[in-house]
Length: 166
Image 1: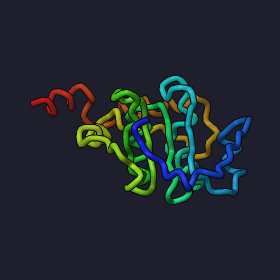
Image 2 (image 1 turned 180 degrees about the vertical axis):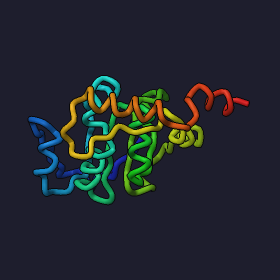
Image 3 (image 1 turned 30 degrees about the vertical axis):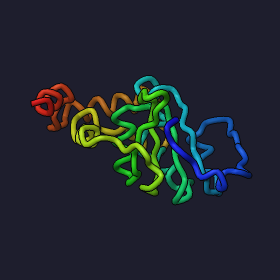
């Protein structure tokens, strides 16, 4: 990745794994974490760990100078992070955009997302996945988002692309 971490901060880092339903387990955690790696199924296949509500729980478990890393570049995911006041950037491997890095500390984001990406959050594709009680099935989350998409007055991604390229 094309990012540098303060090596002194991470010299004595330990890794903890949690097994089971992450939506249940996250409510049981009381520590604050330096790094969160979110490697769930893709948001379109199983949105349970990509909802703004679950990401808010993650935010509450992060130190102010910690980072969240994910392979996902999905607009609803990044839009949720944006709504939660994260600074958002891209991760690169060999100059190829590989994922997302987010932090509550702006200086930790070396490759901020572009103005174009920021504006995508205002389109239909920026509508986030929601699961207020962290108990909905993937199908319920997707259905609720589809209903919100159909009822939204936001620009579609395609219309946005046409306007943005002019």
